[in-house]
Length: 271
Image (cartoon, one colour):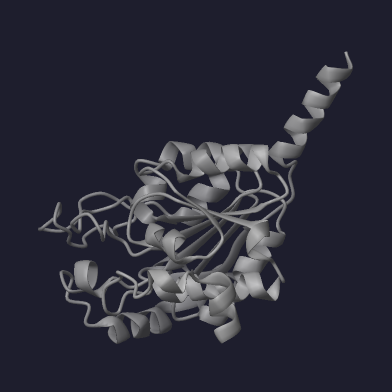
């Protein structure tokens, strides 16, 4: 692991700013292990992030990184992939950054099926900016903007991604780190828009307000309430209430946008 840290982490930027018990570092560790397993070199990788707790990871990763404006990570990453298609481009984003202010960019990049790898750190809350409810805050849960419980229904990222056109969609929790390592690798191998939702505890901004215990309690909750997605397809809807379906939810092949666009440019230049 020391070799990995030397290669992939900007040690001069440590210690990190994440709160005690936050799972964001666990997800970043999975990303590093997946990159190492694929024998990717830092110069072959680009990390693009927006604004939020999760997006701080871009500053800790020792490779080509863009820390962009709120909700615009997918837009910046799209331009980068068009200009440098040989790069493996990862988007590090949070639940609010990706599905609220960045929601429009997210669904259209999925529709285009551009070869980007979106890693959503889902802590169910706007953690860095004050604990407001996000589009992924479950209905009934409390936030600073929902002191009596969130009245809105939350997005299901897997259904949203599939409906928008993503060719790979998977959900994991920070309890299932080895699974997360493998699924990040699978997402990179997909030639198209890949979405990986990683549920991560926010014991300070979300767990404390909703009386969910400390970080270990929240991780145990992931363990006790998670079921494999394939198993869930045989279960009755009432038995799935409150459950987290983990694993690959959707996988298909479709034309990739950069290649399709490049072919049209080539045809135009020949005329």
